[in-house]
Length: 425
Image (cartoon, rainbow, N blue to C red; front, side, top):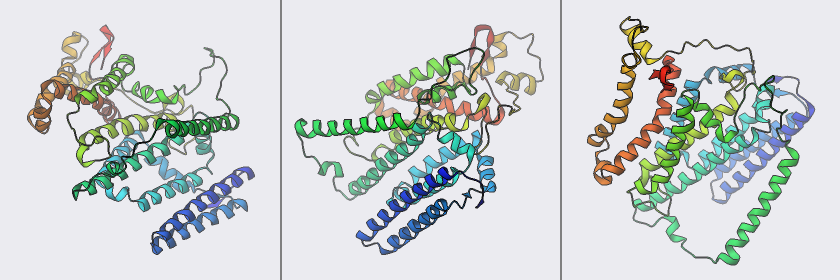
């Protein structure tokens, strides 16, 4: 850390931010003390005091900032490949070591470290401008809310799995009390409605509506982004043609969500949290929702800048940044680089035959291969129709990460490129 010029209002705001974090950690230390864990209580009391030190430093306008070395290191590893790999690796580690990561102390440690880094990062003007943009504030809340709810669900699943393993009933079965709709449920809903209305009113006053000038062809926003809930679809447009990213894949998502209750053959895990009894379903859902949707929303919000280029968290959004890319189709790899043949005299079918064969093999040969090998037990239990519907939905879901990796690693643009018919995959 080193001294740098920071505005007085920013340092005062960060001072109160660290005071809140200190109070949170004092409360957690008090909780640890009540459950007779004196060692943890001492550790978190010390952490709370460190947050107070940061608060005092900001109130005294000492100008503590995140070092340039750390910012450059973060930007160096924030490229599309590493970002996606870290997301997949993080989810895999969370599921495999779920007993460790769902421990309250471990989760609180990760949360405190994340909040500490966020406070330090706010001293960077570029990071602060992106995070505090009114459009992006809900995405920050999305990150923490998705993280918390995923942790909470997995925490309950771990506890239930441990209880089931020793022959006890899940926790939800012990709380089978019935309540009346009136006044219990209606009163709770009314209270929730009042609280949400109050929050929205305060939000609308504090954060300005991000309205821009009327649309005009002479001035186009750069980057021109869709609303946050469409950023995942907009990111798909980088790797697929509009007919695939805007029609086929969203349709498969909707159809898949509708079909899931009819595809599922597992009668266990209904009405209570569990992971052991529903490994495949939970893993597939988290991969699709967290990695292939939320992660893409975060990517499109914070890391996609002018000209839809990829920028690090602390990298200024330079509209003149150029990224040299030579996008190549599969037919180029096969005929030009593989056989050294020119494609000018080829018809579209012969030219794209390798890509067509590859796509057909992926869609038609992979399902029966899985039915005879690693997913044979699913095929036996589900039957022909449900199994092949399940595998087809998974194939369309996995088409996105497959195409992303191919684009990032070998600059593959299209597997099948037929401009004569406006058909590209």
